[in-house]
Image (tube, rainbow, N blue to C red; front, side):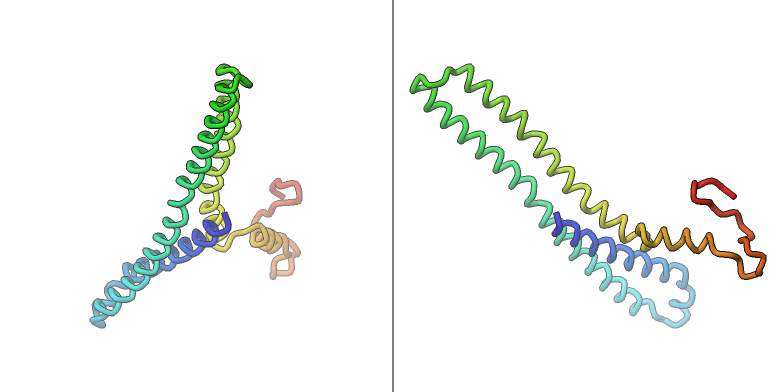
Length: 171
């Protein structure tokens, strides 16, 4: 969880750097061309691109081990239940029907836990993205809201634009 979140944050940060570099190059292409900086800018873009690729591969390595590990645990648990259950059935301590019912009940318990694990694996990068997106977090939103509530510098005591009151309605 924490490792996926940390690497996802790095990936998002580098994606932002890559996007910014591309935007700078596209918007300033005439300047880059006028000063014959195409090679230098290409090298800078390659550098950021390689950093981004490295971060994506590191994230993929962490995530790629998750599903096989979960499935291995599930498969080992099932194998142990079947082996112990077969021994109990052969010893007449358990009927075959009881073993099947127990195995199915175990399957119904394990599957939701696996699904929750996969969901966490999907949500971790999303939470990293939401925290990195334009620096918006709950504190940043609160500060922006407080700036909206301040009196205007004109001295009238009220912003010229409509603001929101504490109930979320327009004043």
